[in-house]
Length: 166
Image 1 (cartoon, helix red, strand yellow):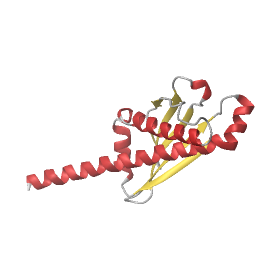
Image 2 (spheres, rainbow, N blue to C red):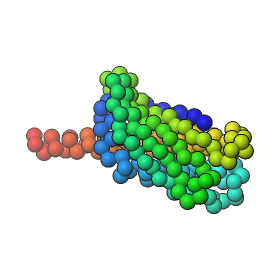
Image 3 (cartoon, one colour):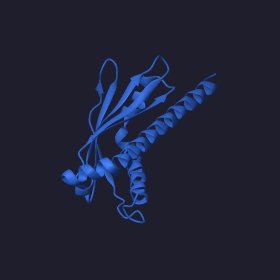
Image 4 (cartoon, one colour):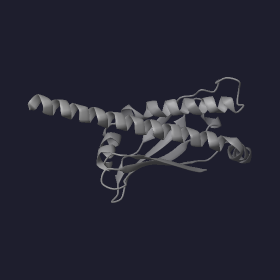
């Protein structure tokens, strides 16, 4: 299965790329875990238990950023820990691409194979694909918000330093 989601940021793509590639292993896994718990709550709401009993942790493996002329790609693999046989691993590309001088697009293109063979594919098409899409959306929205906060803090810090110097 394939899912894609994107957001726009009113920020230069170089700044977003810097924040995203500086130390993503220190903050992206926490965001993935939160997004995963969001997906677990959705699963419970659509009938996979009356409460969230399948809450699971995830592991994120980040590849090296690939810088192309039109975008930067950060490959990642999102894997459920514990009862991982019931949940697919997700391979994705987190992309940063310019949309003009002071705007960029942040996108996530994700691929996964539903577990449980033919039965898993039927269940995925009927229901679980929407949960996966909502989880991906939640993840990318949180990444966008974290990057925006970090850049705002950097801008505030440089304004404070300039004021102190002036």
